[in-house]
Length: 150
Image (tube, rainbow, N blue to C red; front, side, top):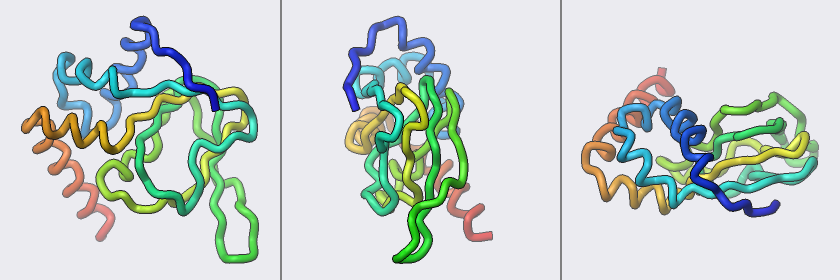
């Protein structure tokens, strides 16, 4: 994994990607822009892990470009099996921002891929700065929780 600088030209693409995530869609452009300094951009080579099943859920990720595989290990003695593929613009790990639950899957680069990451600590800081954002995130989390209980 190689950390990349994030030029200002990236911000429009990033803002568009963030607005597709339900708990960011209610943010004003200024509120989205406040998060830009906290978002990291990294490049992964084929075979490199973005996150591993069972690791702490401590970040949200958005695939900028490339292709990632989703792998799940079932049982103690079996290897991980591919269960899906992620393409540009897709988001993963957003529930980790709210719950700190361990990762449910391993995500690995299938080809050279650039990935944005918002760490949980920076996400919580954004909530502290904006009571309206905090309220919206809590509403979305409650809706998701109710859906999962059905």
